[in-house]
Image 1 (cartoon, helix red, strand yellow):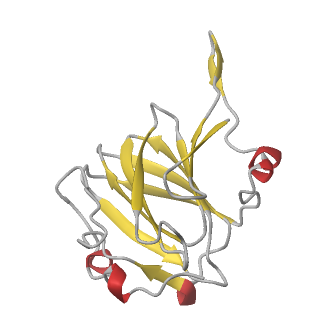
Image 2 (cartoon, rainbow, N blue to C red):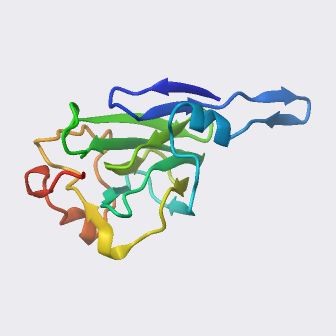
Length: 181
């Protein structure tokens, strides 16, 4: 695995090192020792799969607050997505800033998202599927969200929003979200 730091401290793009032959390929998706050497979360409590039928579907921006603030490891298993993260960590030099990765089944890249970040994505293809590893189990009392279209953050989503939940459409802007400590 090759870890490339993203512009927001603690977040990484992870490229898998595929080994291939006439049968296909093999790659490690996780190694506790490699993650640990970089000081990244190396224990996963929950794994989820998200399937979106329609191109342009937007999900997020979601996060969990302490004591269940969770790091995430996200990989696209089918199709492609524009995966966005926003730093919500109190005292962070990059608080309120965002960055993105295009994740696809074809490029095989993953994104490591530290605890204290909001996460969302927009599907670039029909039938996009994401695999998420979480450092904490989902906890409804700790869940939070951030408005995907907040002009103070300014995420440039690549497509018109074709589908979004009422819940995600009604999330608060950054100005109303308490930083995560």
